[in-house]
Image: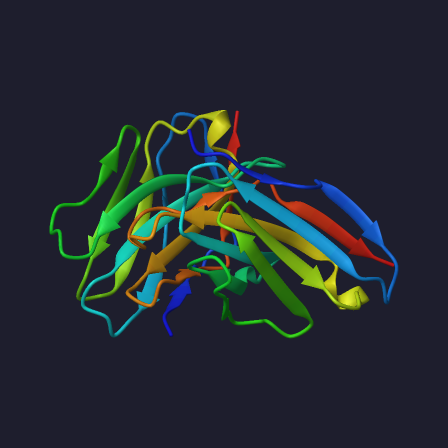
Length: 113
Length: 113
C-alpha cells in the first residue's frame, strides 16, 4: 500500500515564526502536492512538484515556499507564519501518469497564534 | 483552469437508504478523469471511485456508483444501502493534462442510524 506520512498531526506556532511541514511518500511517485483545506473552500493547491528540484505554483502560493531535494520528500515552508495561515494542510502524491489517483497523507492541522 | 462545483454543503440519509451527491465541472479538455474522494472525520482522504471521461459506461465500486453525463458536465455519486461508516466529507475532483487536480468544496454526508 502507498503510504504518505506527514511530520505532525497538530502544530501550534506563533506569528512570524518560520514553519516547516514535511511530507514523505514511500512509493517512488513522481508527483507530490501540498493543499490547504478550509471549511467551505475545499482543497486549494499551494504548490506541486513533478520531479526532484522541480516545483510549480498552484492557486494560492503566496506566503509559502517548497523544497524537494529528494524524490520521496516534499516540504512546505511558511517563511513568516500569519494567523490567516491557520488551516489543515494536506500532502498528496501520485505517479507521473496524472490520471492515477492522488494518495493523501493524514494532514497537519496548523494553528498560528 | 478547471472548476468543480458541489452545490450541496451538507446532506443526510437514513441508514440502508440511497443518497446521491451532485457534482458539476467545467473543462475545455478532451481527456480528463473524474474522481470522488471520501474524508472520514479525523481520518485520511481516500479514493472512492474514478471515471475516465472517454468511457461511456458509468463506474461502479460495490455500493458506490456514478452517473456521468459528459454533455451536461455532471458527475454525481450514488451511495446505495448507506452505512454508518459512510459518514464523511465527500469531494468531487477532476484531473487533466496539466498535471493538476481540481477539487470541489465538498459535501458533508451524515448517515443517521
